[in-house]
Image (tube, rainbow, N blue to C red; front, side):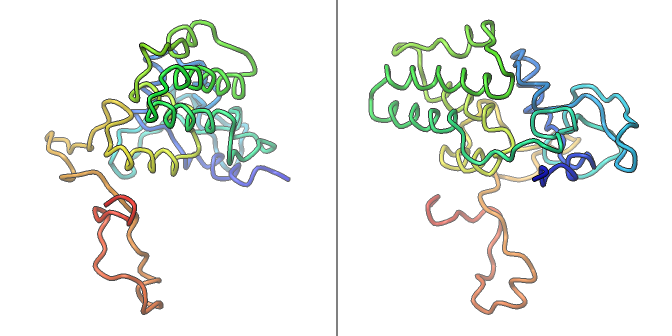
Length: 225
């Protein structure tokens, strides 16, 4: 079976955010080229490419005429035969790391975090990266923190953005570190708080009398109260 997301990626409809791309570039993350392509494709003829570089789109703004790094046809996720990732070993390990840290078992949390980072790199790159792992996968009971666990989970959960958004809401948008509400060109924020849910579609409001009315994207879902 062919990768069902291949056509979406071919049309350059999934591009890097500036926040995420800058995080990967600044950290010399080895998964950069497994996640993103530095060329955009012509959907009518995939052999036609144009260089855009590893550049991300500023967060929180609509479409524009610029080109940004897409999930292209040469990445781990973009090939026609690429697998669709649902549940991974490294996701389970990141969950273990958070649970252990919350339970006060820092040693287990550090071990799970280190293993999760290594498993993610091995899965997407096919080999270890001693330099990156020496910095981000060498935690001890004395150095591991929730911030480190969630930041690395954010990097490792690429293409599973709904899970990352759930993590962000659970932690009241503390992680990944430095995430901010987007700003207009004049420097003012586009909203007073982060989005907490998706709003009900108009078709549902029109056709389903039981659909909740008056819900905004800032209202919290039941578990996020």
